[in-house]
Length: 114
Length: 110
Image 1 (tube, each protein chain N blue to C red):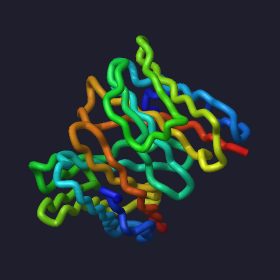
Image 2: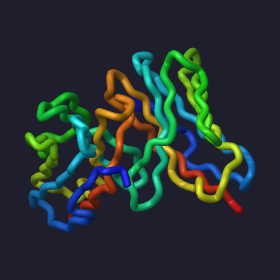
Image 3: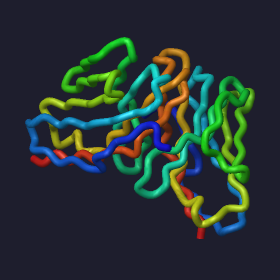
Image 4: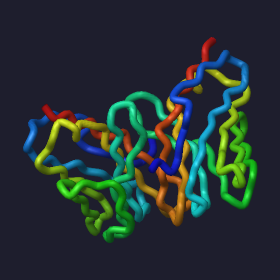
């Protein structure tokens, strides 16, 4: 158990809809990262937050947005969903008590867009 | 342009033998390199890392080698065990931002 929790575990929705994925980092970790893993592909970095502020941005679509709240949990919002958005979405955290570069991953949310 | 590449999508080895997983990168600004292991239906878990100032780091059966001039790193697992069967991702970090390869699926046969 990495200490990172993600909800929901599975999500099935239709094209054009909007969904919110939630992540709670390890206790004390200030950084939260979001990744997308499409079928048979690697982990694509989407965005990083540090203590409530956006720290780095990767290949995140404009239809996607994220935020980190004062209690350090984070949400990833995906809107105007397309079939190609079907993927595994991972949240990771890092910070105190670990190497700065080491990330602890949650179990992921599997999103299916029909 | 993929900055971190794992050119072998899969690798199969016999139990007890050595597994060697390879990773190449292009960005000379990367200063930290990590290997993660992923089982199905789980998130990746950190395995071992190496700073760019070193060329080798060992942790039990796992050793990571870094060749900066060739921009190449490798993960050696000796001896390989069936429980090592998983997808292995290499990642390269620049100021804390990690870029991941596409992964190599390792199968260790009993």
